[in-house]
Amino acid sequence: MRARILTAVLALLGLQLAWLIAPAYACGCGAMVPDPATRIAVSDEQSILRWDGRREQIVMRLTVGGDAEHAAWIMPVPHRAAVRLGDPAVFGRLARAIAPVHRTRYHFWPRNGDWPFDGHDEVGAAAPPAAGGVSVVDRQRLGPFDVARLTATDPAALGDWLLAHGFSLPDRLRTALQPYVDRHWEYVAVRLAPHTGGTPLHGALDPLHLTFAADRPVYPMRLSRLARTPQSLGLYVLAAHRMETRTAIGGAPPQVVFAGRLAARDGALGELAAGTPYLTAFTQAFPEPGRISGDHELRRAAADTPVQQVIYDDELREVAGIPAWLLTFGGGLLVIVTAVAVVVMRRSRRPVTPPPPVQPPPPFSPSAPLG
Image (cartoon, rainbow, N blue to C red; front, side):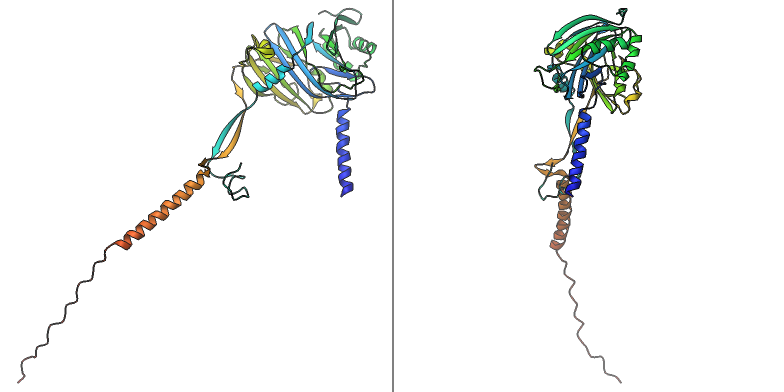
């Protein structure tokens, strides 16, 4: 038995280690490339897309793990992007804004977990690309990030630039970037590094805030098809109205977990939602990432129908701590017993009519003499 338990534990640790050190070429919105001979994994990704009809903004925060001390993150964008650090507080504000509403739902008859089915006796329970390959449009330092904005005429040129800066572009990623090169998209290449040297990248990184012109809102997803394990997408969309995806791009149908107007007027969320007060929050699963067919294009929904998740807390209806069904059942039984008792008592108290008196026979009189 000990040997079996040890084997199971080692197998579980092996699976966790394999996941942790797996290459993270795909991370939803963009691609992550680690140093040679090191590994990095994106364990969580949160993204906000804001579109005001002319410009698009994407605020993205990655949570990573592994043994890489440096990594490069590449994100294709349709037009030249301005990059700055984002405010991490905005994600907490959004999470609270879409939190499900708890409502109590009462039931009359007892269920599993309610008395008497709880096992207790007590009551209740509970731009155009530059010729010659890569053109560095701009380069800047943002906190721990070295950010370069690039144009590229072919993936090979982009790979050469990455190689010159210490990163190797995998062949699969080189091929996946070709559609963006064909469409003359630009790239935001970010060199990630921890605050202190010699420390692996780990935990939630500072958010990056990208702003670029857009004729229509689009969320780059094509590079996620490189993932070897099922992927999931969680996306906040801020616009003037409720938004929807045009297609499922090879994944399960997107699910809207929240839709409604935000009341935030101040702070990072109030600034971001100014002019785009309608929030639509999506989740989507991609069981087979290889089937992802392109980028998510979004459009206005037919109506601004609000959506709010509701979590029902089922409770047994009680009166003064006593189950209502017990009071009703017991009270009904008591009424019946009382009625029977009253009937019996009334019958027992009814006066009894005595029987009529028995008349004595007439006195004997001798008959007349014979003869």
